[in-house]
Length: 213
Image (cartoon, rainbow, N blue to C red):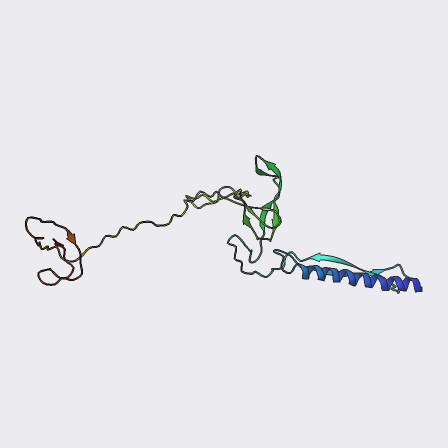
């Protein structure tokens, strides 16, 4: 190996380490990215043709390896439609290719992701941060069994009755006792009314009985 080959070998090592630092920087920058998977770096030695029994170093090369099978950290979220998969599995999603009559059109190709930052859009679809629409198998509301076996894009309708504030309250109570007493209001002017009360004195009955006046 001449001096020029030695310099090339050393430069290839620097380039490989620089590539590894790029992957590390990308991992740090996406530490808070939903569904992001760490990217590892692997190194391979380059060996040139040499005489039998000899091995001449000829540099090194580096490559990226995606760790899609490693479980990420699940964190709590304040959005009710945020989801995460604990363990193996993927969200089945679809990417729209266009729109027709203000409705998304899909190509029919199923995609898979671990990014569960879904939000309900104006059309009733659950869409994650990458613009992918959540798919699933519908459930029969009567039997609770899946309808079919092929996933389809899920759309939810907002047909719930809106809540209304209470404006009036009707209250009915039952008191002990059924007896009643009468008392004249004076002269020929006699009026009657029924009143419930918790205690009486004089000729009035106690224990919450009904009295007419």
